[in-house]
Image 1 (cartoon, one colour):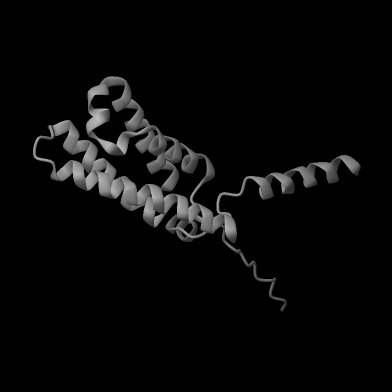
Image 2 (tube, one colour):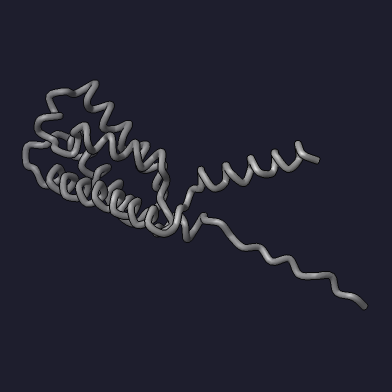
Length: 145
């Protein structure tokens, strides 16, 4: 009996610690974090797309930054988008280090915040929480005849 209650307590503890959609002040903090990095990616992506001397690869990075920024601001597919944008930033750092000075969206802070969002999740104030969040299931009682 004691072992069963410890297992149940352990599961409840994990649910509280590792929730995917925290509400309240943590949700507001995650919204601010997502908005800060999303707006930064939108502004820098727009600058990359509008630059006249950008190569095709730079244009692709600009479009990726625009899509990632929009998705992060809205909170749609947040872990996926944060992971892809962090990997894209790391890939550019490794394979095209000359671009890092010309593309301001590829600094270490942007990559670190994208990884933090990947690990923390979108929060309760997001499209992810609305579309994929916890649902309350009501099972109707049996009808007696």
